Length: 345
Image (cartoon, rainbow, N blue to C red):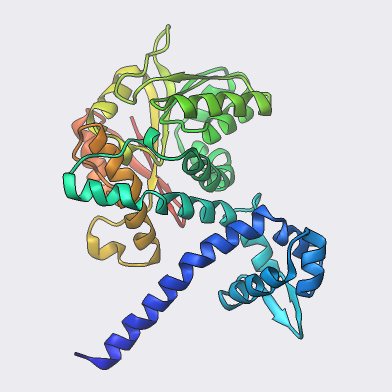
């Protein structure tokens, strides 16, 4: 055994084990208002407890743990949020770490069920997970869509924004809680926007989100391989956000999209950022996506009888699938720190 390599591995293990309670403590900090109390300014643990209505002895340990993790700043008995920490922990910020922490907790609740799936080969459908997971996924992905969809991804598609401004039609398949669907409806009020999802609970949540935002968007329960075409012609734009790899029949879904698009319509595919080989994904983001895929994406695809693409499919595999479905113009139109964005026509 190489002692130096073992010690490096042990250091990684300690970091991973420390991350487990940190996810819970970040969630507790948001739920109890401790982060909101810190945003009011520097404070001792007694002041934080008073501001948030929590018990100081718990706050003291909580603050130590999150400071050790780099999420709080400590100086002479007082705790603060640096500008960077403030942005990272802001539920309305570009990352929404509290939502990601809630998502981690929801995923881990399914460990026993995942063990059974490993032993039996059975799937775990999206609707079988706790609703907190569905809400956590929506909250985690929404900031990225808000940052990039209207200002970057849609303008990268040839002629699409002009058609939507003029009243084009949009289908968002696998819409979940409707985060992206609502953004499109807000930006293009003349467009006809419909979200489709196979999970009735998500469709209900998306309908409520659209009503709260005051936008004109409809939502229906339908599978990605069986969603309806518009009554006249085809869709000007079909979208799918971080969901193609979850499907049991991604090829069938791709063929259905091609059938429902207008002759000059466009399919926008947003997928997790991934290289084409395992070796290309051996980094922190790849570890996160492989882990989430093991808990969520692959089990759902298997529950639908599919072979499962997995969350790290990569551009080459996705492009090949789209070509097999009959798309002749497939391009990578954008990448972000977490997403790969393709256009198919």
